[in-house]
Image (cartoon, rainbow, N blue to C red; front, side, top):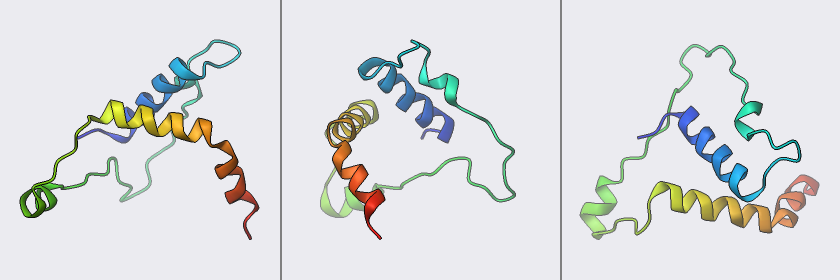
Length: 88
């Protein structure tokens, strides 16, 4: 399991690699820490044991590989993100 900050840092590392910032600083420099809200989740977890047991399913790729593919998809499909902003 990964903490939220670990996921954010992994996203930043992927972006550093495939879409470096013009000033060459890491995207991690953009992370701002704020006080936790009472009851705020520090991480989110999925229990995939049921799908593994009942459907004999398991992922073929690890977290880093799937995260990289997801980020690349979004970067190549910015039109899709922009279209969400215009929907009313």
